[in-house]
Length: 423
Image (cartoon, rainbow, N blue to C red; front, side):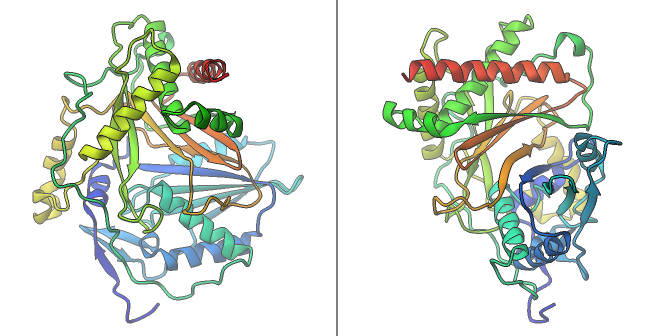
């Protein structure tokens, strides 16, 4: 370790909030599952992981009070399994997700590698804690690991200096969108088979694939909204349709919790640089899907311009000792009248400043998201090499696998509507 490099750094406001809100019932971590046609060997992946922990030092650290403190001897934290008929790959990943993951005791990045000696394919499953890493930083970390493992970048042997992540600020941010409902958004109704279900800590998921290239081209021709706006609108329409289907048609006040990148420099800076805005189904039922997309674009632009995403640089409570602030901060952030939206939607469409595809030999990406205590489902997407994969992460205590497959079908129906309207 470089003796001239500081061994600690204060948690940012976002890091502190994520560490305080983390719980065993609803852990604040997310998982990227890379399906690789060809992958570096296991030892090369270990070397790449070690290099990534040195390049991005919070990922080789643990939370000590209100600071990140470097682990004396960070391990690679990679578990190796071979695919076998005795246990499905999905159940292996579920077991990995159910492990305790506490950034106060462990490094905030953990990996599982599932190899298949029959066809040489590898599944690289990486679990990131949101108190240290957001989606863009996760892509940076994995890109460096894989490039070092394949010999395309040099190994970093010394730990880099901790660097705070510069975030955007706003001179007079709004607390909520002018499109917000009066009172919190309606939740997603439980299915008939889970009408008395209770939330659990378990996360299951279902992934669908969308041919993105032609759809994106048609949207650019139509104008007035983006591909991402369409995906958000489809999620809103699924939430409305789901509540109507389950006898809660009056619960039409749905919205999505939309993560937004608030870095000063959009594609640079490692850490947690993600805030949120909320997008509401504030359009007529009779409007075309494309017009609904344009309304979503209007809301996103308004939220961006008026600073709904703004994060205070300092929380007054944060000056107090940690043991004094945890309970009041949790109570404050969990206020029942705060609008946490109906569910989460996110989509990674660009991974770097260049338009190049940054991952090689990648056949599929699955994004298993975190679930807030009020959410039964999160929809997280990734686009790479002309394909989009949408992963529906859900709580099996509140929704069944059949429920989520039905939701995915409803989502595909909305995309079919878009295809027809774009002709």
